[in-house]
Length: 242
Ligand code: MN
Image 1: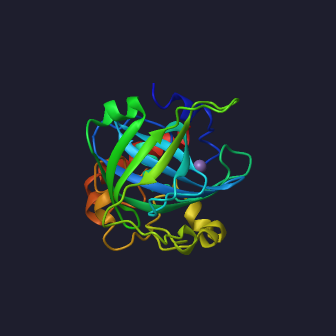
Image 2 (image 1 turned 30 degrees about the horizontal axis):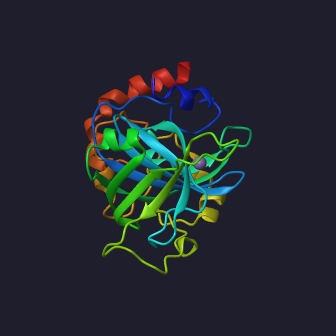
Image 3 (image 1 turned 90 degrees about the vertical axis):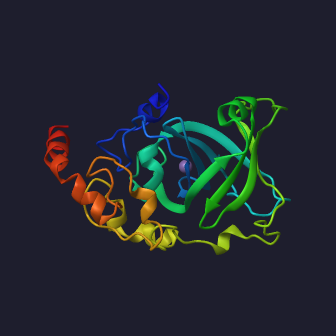
């Protein structure tokens, strides 16, 4: 099962991250999360075959085609991770602060499964910060001691490129506008499990309007929340029994 490794690394009674389940509805969204763990990095995730294919990008993606960014492929993440912003408590895998740095949709430029298997994934992004054509290219020459998980994330030349792109100037959440420091110091951001209403930036609501269980989706729109009110008690029961 694609999410086995994700689930194995985490204890869901100790981390606010969602438990991994395969999503049946196929969509093509992407998310980039800024993650301050032991080292600051960005997690680049593409929704594909019911999971989020994931790469850790130490320097983050760039809109500058001359900046080839190392991207280490990591375990698939559940689609519900898409909107995780908050703190992973000390002592847990990946402990630190997570920001939803960019969100949007992606479009493969060819057969996605084939390109992924070949290690030459070409795609176009439509996000709030990242746009245009990119390629994720698996590195063939493996250094001694390498795990064979090294890819390069490269911006293709097009109208969306920005040769002077500086990711450090974009320290704000695509969902809440908060800086990483503000998320780190804001206890409310960590309340993944609660049904607490959290603000979603205007224009981002549509990304969260598909059918997921109440309580797993604190960022959903009002109308979507209403339609699953009946499921709430069931979800609550399961959680208190866990
Ligand atoms: Mn990470």
